Amino acid sequence: MTKTILTGDRPTGKLHLGHYIGSLKNRVALQDNDQYDPYVMIADMQALTDNAHNPKKIQDNLLNVALDYLSVGIDPAKTTIFVQSQIPALSELTMYYMNLVSISRVERNPTVKTEIKQKNFGEGVPTGFVVYPISQAADITAFRASLVPVGDDQLPMIEQCREIVRTFNATYHTDVLVEPEAMLPPAGLARRLPGIDGNAKMSKSLNNGIYLSDDEQTLHDKVFSMYTDPDHIHVSDPGKVEGNVVFEYLDVFAPDQTAVDDLKRQYQAGGLGDVKVKKYLFDVLNDLLKPIRAKRAEYAKDENAVRQMLKDGSDKANEVANDTLKKARAAIGVNYFDTLEK
View 1 (tube, rainbow, N blue to C red):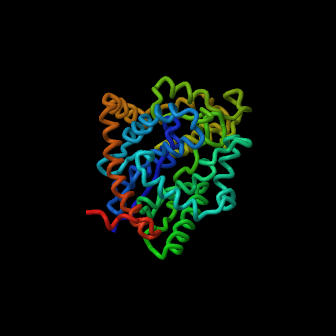
View 2: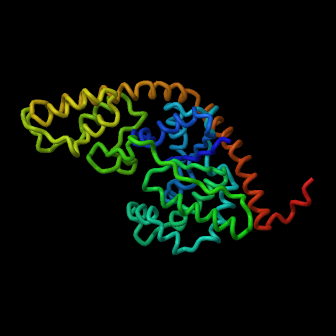
View 3: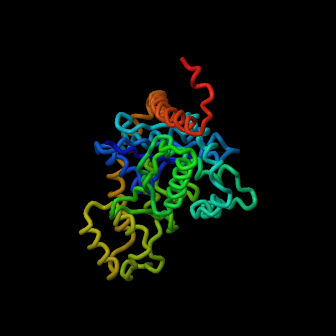
């Protein structure tokens, strides 16, 4: 039997290299494995939890995220790509699950606590943001996903989903919901790519990322503005590799790691300047992004076709989610009028 996989992204901006190495590259690999039935969700409702007063941001980036998916090779013939808000069953399942989870349990979720702190909400935390782990559980269970690719920081979200599944099935004496497992990145895959400014995380909100859609000149400017070793002032000075963003990127993206090791030795000994290392990284990244840019430009020529792809994926997702909802309603006993159906 194939295993259903669910992943997704919030449409709050174009996707960057951190997304590529952290999830997109692996999604492309998974869709070519006959063991899996992958679903990819554009989580616009989740994005609205902290962007409710700026819905245009979500509207504008919905297509950007879809184009990024297609440009890296996510194939709608192999992967169901859909839009969260177009699946009404998700909202109803969320409501049923909310009755099974206490406020204190949601507030204890470490991922939620961290993200609330990062967003600087103060006293104005939107309720939808606090309870989004419950909504996420609806997303996962609606498609009976048994595997959810995540990083370590998202493990508490999967555990909360598993708790909801167990509570629902026990309360309503059913096995309709599938308990998911976290699918951690393959060994050796970078979990988190630092920002070009040296920040520990590449982030859309910090605007410190290299986007998959960046043109060649923009890529050049970003690479040459990268944080290196502030004490490496002269070419002859010995330089530090640890904490040097350029070398961190080379460790992840350079196909010839022997050449990278040679550059590190030269840099640490003195005699190798930042400009040469950055030029090497620019060539590596440009080789990676050139075909992605080209595919994106082709898909962008027909935006209506991309929107139709999203609608087709959402129609397929609705069939699966509605089937799960029908079974959940029957388990709860709120299927009052099913016997009247012809």
